[in-house]
Image 1 (cartoon, rainbow over the protein chains, first blue to last red):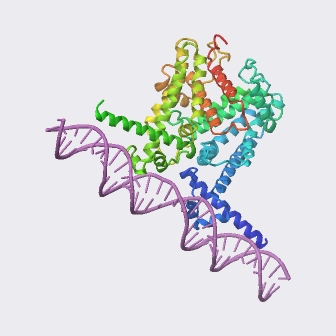
Image 2: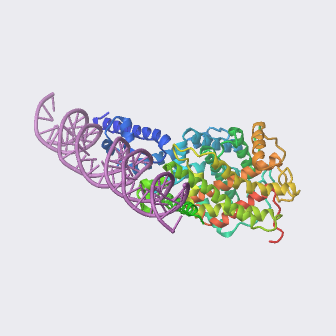
Image 3: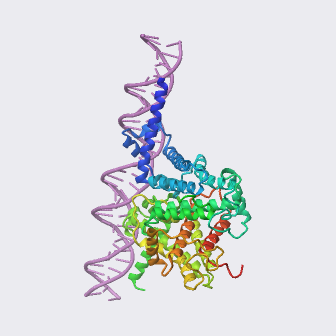
Amino acid sequence: MTAASIRARVRAEMTAEIKAVARRHLETDGANLSLRAVARDMGMVSSAVYRYFASRDDLLTALILDAYNGLADAVEAADAAVKDRGQLRARWLAATRAVRHWALATPAEYALLFGSPVPGYAAPPDTIAANARTAAVLARVLVDGYTSGVLSAQPGEGGGRWPARPAKPLAPTVRTDLVRAREGIAAGLPEELILTGLTSWIQLFGLVSFEVFGQLNNVIDARDAFFDEQMEMLADLAGLPERASV
Amino acid sequence: MTAASIRARVRAEMTAEIKAVARRHLETDGANLSLRAVARDMGMVSSAVYRYFASRDDLLTALILDAYNGLADAVEAADAAVKDRGQLRARWLAATRAVRHWALATPAEYALLFGSPVPGYAAPPDTIAANARTAAVLARVLVDGYTSGVLSAQPGEGGGRWPARPAKPLAPTVRTDLVRAREGIAAGLPEELILTGLTSWIQLFGLVSFEVFGQLNNVIDARDAFFDEQMEMLADLAGLPERASV
DNA sequence: TGTACATCAGTGAACGCGCGTTCACTGATGTAC
DNA sequence: TGTACATCAGTGAACGCGCGTTCACTGATGTAC
C-alpha cells in the first residue's frame, strides 16, 4: 500500500468518525447540530473539522445522505432475505418492518429525513435518488405481483381477501401524477396499483412517524402487533395473497 | 370599566401580540425561537418579555397550546357547518379538509405539533386534552353513524361500498388499547370501528405531514384532488354511505 | 377630591455562554529527482 | 539512498455575532384612606 493511499484511508476514517460523533449529537440536539461540540468530542480544535467538511451544512448534508442510504440498505436487505420471491406478503411485511426498525433504532436520523424540514436548509437533489431506493423496494413487490399475474389492475381481483373496488374513475390530474410516478419506480404498473402503493407508502410512514414522534403515547401500547395488523391490512388492500403456510 | 380591568385588558393584548410575533418567527426559524428576536420585533427590550412569559419554554408552550386549540376550533367549525348531521360523508370530508387547510395555512405551527419533537422540550399534559378535541370531532362521525344504525360493527356492512372485511380476530393486546381509546373519545363504538377510525387518523395526518413537509414534491401535484380521493377511500373503508345527492 | 403608597411595565446594563468561520502558523508526512 | 520541496492535518487566536436570564432602576398607573 502506497503512502498516499494510507493517508487517504486515514482521511476516510476520520471523516467517518466525525459523522459518527455528529450522529450521536443529533440524538440529543436535533437538527441544530454544533460543529464545535462535535470537534470537542473528537478532541480536536473546532477549525480542524474544516479539513473534512467545508461547512456545517455540508456535514448535515452528508448525514442526511447517509441516513437515506442506511434506510434503503436495511429495506433492501430485508426484502432480499425472503428467498422465495413469490411470497409477496412476506416480502411486504419484511420490508415495511425494516423501515420501522430502522426508524426506532435511529430516531434522530429518521426525524432528519421525515420530520419538520430544517429551516433555511435545502436538501440537495442526491437525496431524492437515495429516497427512491426505498420506495423502489416496496414498489417492486407490486410490480412482481403484477407481472407474474398474481395481482390484477383492480386491487383485490387477484386472490386477495378484498373484493375489487367498484370502478370509480380517477381524477385526470391525479392520473397524470401517477403516470409520472410510474416512470421512475414502478415500470408497467397500472395506475390503480400505483395508487394503492402510494396509499400504503403514506400509511406506512404516517404510522412510523406517529410512533417515533410520540403521537402514539398513551394510545397504542402494543406497538409491534398494531404495526403488523396495519401492514397486513394494507397487503389486503393491495390484493397480496395470503401466505402459503401460516 | 374599572382602571384595574383596563390594565388587565392591555396586558392580555400585549400577551396576544407577543404570541403573534412569535408565530411569525416560527415560520422562518422553526422551533428554535428567540426571545430576543421577538422582543426586537415588538420594539421592546428583551427583558420586558419576562413580564409576560416566565421563560422561553413558557412562550413555546403557550404557542403549542394555542395551535392545538386553533386546529380543533377549525375542525369543529367545519363539522358543525354541515347542517344535516346525517350526512356523515360530508362531515368526514369537511372535517378532514379543515385539518389540511389549517396545516397548509400555518405550516410552522403544524410542524410544532406533528413534526419532530423539539429536543429537550416536554409538552405539558394540557396539550393532550387539546389534541383530543380534534380527534373527538372525527370520532363523532363514526359514533353518530353507529348509534343511528347506519354503520355496523363490521365496517362495510352498513351500506358502504366495501363489503365486510372477513372476520379476522384482533390481537388481544391491540384490543386492549382500542378499548382504552374508546373511553375518552369514542363512547360505545365497537373495536372494529375504533380501529377503522385510528387507521384513518394515521392516514390523514400521514398525508398532511407529507404535503406540509415536502415529501409530495415532484410526486403529487394535484394535491387537492389527491387528498379528496384519499379521504373518500377512507370513508369507503369505514362504510360511510354515499352522499344522497351527488 | 386629594394625597400617600403599592403595583406594575418597561429600561439598560451586565453575566456567562456558545456559535460558525477565517487565518497565519507548525510540524509531520509524502513526492520528485 | 538522500535531499529539497510540496502537501496536508491540526493548532490557537481572533472576529463578530446571538442567546437566555438576572437585577437594580425609573416612571407611570392604580388603590386606599
